[in-house]
Image (cartoon, rainbow, N blue to C red; front, side, top):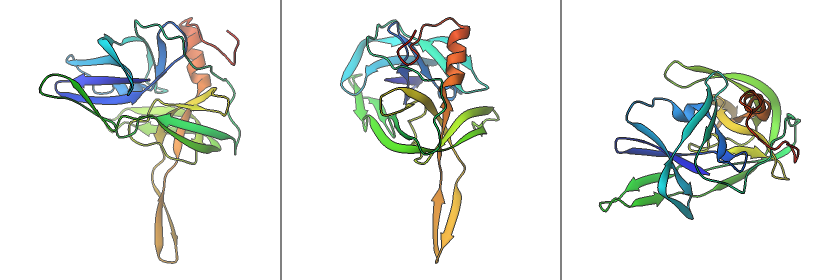
Length: 220
């Protein structure tokens, strides 16, 4: 699902997903960085095909800045939601990453929302290794991303998107990318980056702490 942040005339879009039918969802905490008293976080609908009218403001339930996890709620029922797995996927396991890369939102002169490049993006990938890595948000906030590395890098706008297996079960969420590394051979230079997914076990611990209902591989 997609949500936006609005600060003055600036708007951006990011990904999150429901974990039960009562409007509870999971995303990354860094999507909420640099908010001030003029910033609003709104649910605009299941973009691009279903706009929400009127817009619904997002309620913060818990924000764990250390592990980059945000759990929120909107006043909208959702019969469709993801199941979670507490298991860490092994090396070589096939997965799929998803999100809304490079999306653009704007209001025209009539105040109507215009969507540019808003599409759901899915990228098959596989797990490289288990890893724990610190991530700097660029403003001095260091977060610990505890999870696993993926071969294919996530694009801007895909943070918070689920990483799921072939059955559609969530194994983690996209948190960050590794620093570029250079591979050189025969005069060619290739920049290599990998995506880092935050394992769902961190999310499950927060859900249990707040007694939020979720589905664990089909078992509540």
